[in-house]
Image 1 (spheres, rainbow, N blue to C red):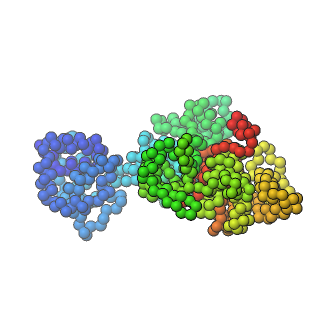
Image 2 (image 1 turned 30 degrees about the horizontal axis):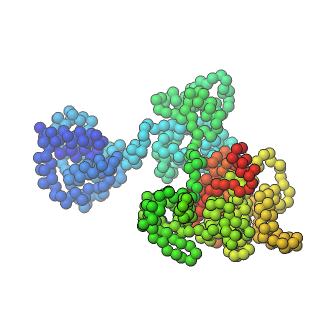
Image 3 (image 1 turned 90 degrees about the vertical axis):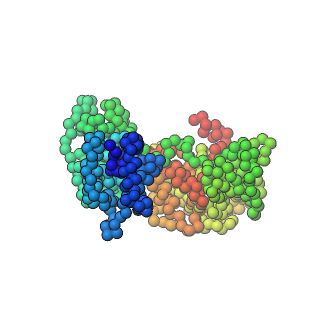
Length: 604
């Protein structure tokens, strides 16, 4: 007995496998005649009136045949009818036709929705009419998890509630108590605690919020969060080893995780904490525990953008015939193509070195379609191009000096081990552009005041005098630069030079940067690896018109607690600014301080 058109039309709501099975059965039962009869009653012009939202499917390959077959059966819309809402299906103009008995017997689960769809302009069942829920199901690779957040996660990142995609979040009551205890003060932790409390209040005050059933995390506009937030509204039954004191907050959270694991089995319950000892105790009890990873820009420091790329040995052989070159001023430009172009970024440095071949050192200035433009560099290693008496000694230093001296580059980041010349080059370039070229009015230097050892207490004097002990690197490099520039001017000449230099350099504390705007300033941020991403954003956004900012640091010497190479503000800035036409980054690879310092950097 031939199947009626209704089952084939219903195939638009089936999964790809079920759709192909239904199509195969339709071919065996000669369903072509009813299809032709249905198409004759509906002209082909109605195919273009089908809503594209009906063709949503897990993959484009499976969506194409379903969209075609569904569009062929779609009736023309009536002008007087209102368009369907996002949560409703378009009403059908066909009269209700009872499905034959064989169809109901073979597919009893789908018989009722078919009758409801073809009977009247009634809304479709909720599961089939929820695109957002359907997209979340497609995105999820398994069942939804429940994450129990420790207090330190909320104090570390107040927006962590919205970082778990479609999964649910559970907050024990002791977490709210600890959050309340950290909200007083002007520290970063206190500010994060207050922001987390305001976020929880906004979720609880949203329209239709029901704490007993869970608060929708996307109710305040955070569409990336598809789960629910649950609070501990009743005591939970759990038992912990007697060696864990019951009154301690960490142990109470572990007990809540243990109770939830038994209550929601086999659903996975995971504890998320920044406390290493907390995670160790959880794993010792057989509980799932994870670190909060969303704050890390990179999982591995070796993946950090280096700012330079070595061209392959066969570069000229493969691309030499199609290279276009021209001269403009003192620079030579090359327009190249080939498979290496997708790997390039604006202001990235490339170099080619091979025995018996001419070397190439250039910077990417333009990327368009499948071609890139390379600009040759100025050689600051030559004595005639010395900057305030300083010559570059290796390839990476020359790349860095080209960035520091380019007025079109507003933001420069320099990373490298101790003794690679970061501070010296930044100061030399700054003095040249402030005193000689008059491009900037003065140099402003600041750094994170994080002690390597024990703090020595409060320091007397003005702001600049308090910052003096932290600026030993500045004093050492200024002494070298003043000695090299003064020549044989004598003691009076060197004193005058030092006074001139000092008058153009201002030492500022980061604590008073909020609200300031720097106009035509050359700003140096030293030891930037000790800054958090939020502190880095605060400093960079102080830049006004004509200001250049240089961030320097050694990611192997992070002294700030709770910061790693992956979560440092310097790593964050390098990763976010790469490819921007007015920024550049270079990782300095070789130390030039002394053979003792270089050897110590390698072996210690």
